[in-house]
Length: 431
Ligand code: C2O
Ligand code: CU
Ligand code: CU
Image 1 (cartoon, rainbow, N blue to C red):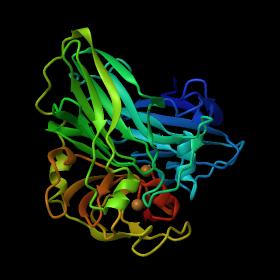
Image 2 (tube, rainbow, N blue to C red):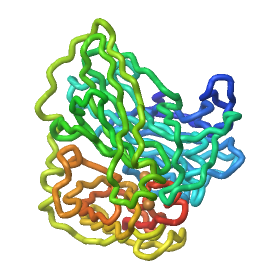
Image 3 (cartoon, protein in one colour):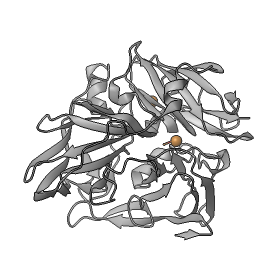
Image 4 (cartoon, rainbow, N blue to C red):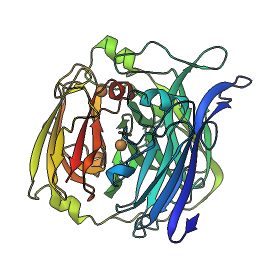
């Protein structure tokens, strides 16, 4: 609802039960329902207010992943909501359209809370967005939240032994459903895909090997649509793709084996050698025709200028084990103090034999290089999370939200949730 010009939402984190497998009941957690949460949607320039009630038996938080906002509204580990309490976050959306998301971030408990079912999408629209892009939610604009779980024979979630990368499940849930079929009635459908898994990396491709058309990554639209045969998506990352279907055809969105530069045993443990059917897309017998796509999706001057902009600071982050620069997260330690309005280059080095990724709160970045080379075209847009296969280095040009707070920090961390829980995280403030 919109009251006094403020777009207002209410989320209630609560316990429930879900039926993923026919006839079996699975205890789950969700926002407003039993599993996952509603898709929130707002437009750039709007002020949003979200009241979060915690009716769980444990303290939690709700973090707005991908959003630029004041540190006090970020919902990281410092914004604890105790059982029976509520917390209200309010901020003005000052960033372009993007598919961002929300999830719990209680220190040391993020994996458990997300695995129980707490996560949801937050779609940001911009009045400048090309009208040619599909944008009717649930009709030609479809959320695809990818998660993996394992089940006990009685239907409860199983907790298999953790691989080095964290919990990897053998069953894929898409928006909380096993083996989903999406029937589309338009020639063109937009899929907003979130990797909401704890540790699994997906290597997306179409079963008929047609190209994937990518229009957006984590933090917004690409300047131009890009095609690729595969999209690697690690936990926390989003990608928006277009599916152009022919009447009557069925195509499967699949995850293929991937090379994360790890030895065989670790690859197997991380699920990197798995082939998984994610979503079956069925095009109806008659389809609403698609309009031609614009050549340019967004004009983005910042994007063009940032690579050559005066860089205020360069920082280095080394990922090894579950430490960053040799340190585990300390809620009382501020690792970096940034100047408001700065452009920075961050070099993130995975010096470990294991896959990691790297996410920065309250920020958008360009990947300038990965392994000394330009990233593939579809990864040259705005991001907030970058995948780092074993041994790889990424150079990022980072911009931050404009809010300052000398006391309350934002986080950067590995988004493999088990690593994050182990303390593979640091804190920065903006002053
Ligand atoms: Cu998606 Cu620090 O989080
Ligand atoms: Cu985040
Ligand atoms: Cu990690």
